[in-house]
Image (cartoon, rainbow, N blue to C red):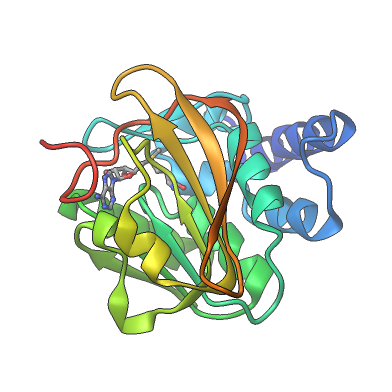
Length: 220
Ligand code: SAM
């Protein structure tokens, strides 16, 4: 078993590589990555792979995203302290921990699989993250109790942009979401809600996520 010092050194190299390649662009994202290494959010048997820039398995047949993918979405979100952020697809809780570090405020995250709600809560507690609130539910409906949001980040692939998520954005708010096919590729979209309520969509490029399953997503 690799010791924690070695896991941390490997992780620092990954962060260095992502910074050198221009994937991590800003100091706050780099700082958040260094504060919460990915190995803290995977099962022990995957610890020694946590620094590798690829997705890894988490319970219930789901995945924790590749570090470069998480960095790209966080940079596109341009998170600032004090923002009200909703994440859809908690998975391991890693991305939510990074968001919380960037906004320095409470973060709400919704997961549809009960086993993963527990997994994420355990990981977050072990990592010492106190301001992430994990809820069980269908995130395609958003999370009305804490709306409207400055940012909504969806970490599963949707067939189309779920209307409730657009409704729950503040004017000037931004939704980051992969949209495309069930099994293969999606396009990552940055959806901006203008002051007058109109929507502007920007396509970032091709990505591959597990499906977003729910009332306004794929059917089970
Ligand atoms: N953000 C996660 C992390 O940091 O580990 C990785 C997310 S994983 C790629 C996608 C997650 O979305 C899975 O855990 C899956 O169960 C969840 N999911 C799929 N459809 C959902 C829905 N309608 N509502 C909430 N979560 C959903």
